[in-house]
Image (cartoon, rainbow, N blue to C red; front, side, top):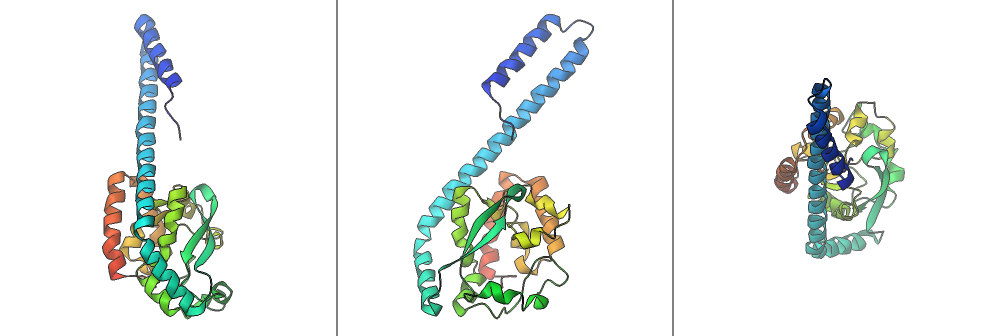
Length: 249
């Protein structure tokens, strides 16, 4: 992203001084038009840069606070997982973020230990038929503890660490796995233009009930109209979406 440096500001001032001195010449009109263009460009860069910085500061503050405040829940979930099958607490995946950059993505483990190996055996039972994404109601790989934490999206909470690191934001398109991205069309890849998030427009609209093409449409809608106010509205609507558990399975 372009940043507005002091040297750039001085350059604009020098151009303004030259225009005041020579702007009434035959080429003054074109000179003034170029000057307006550059002033608008730098002003826009300042606005966009400031918004991105504020969004990042909010991500850090909220994610850090939630990691501390929710630590008792983390401990309770960890105990439940260990008492169920003594397997690892976290399930790690590789996910694809902004501009195709891959990063490590954790969840509280909600499935049996060899869930990924069993996935190929049940692909044809996906709730999203003829789709890139895999979603399945009553997935046999989900443990009883897993069904509870998935219903309330508690399994996603370790991703607050990704938000703190900068791999993710609080709001943005959900990060896909490389296997899905490999099947993306050029228009589908538009959802990789921004930092992925914990929650999104389609996450509050029905989560797993939203087919892939509509997910992409909603992600593009967010990208083209994103603002801090929109992020706040999505975060507020995430609370009832999680509590009611619509589309969570």
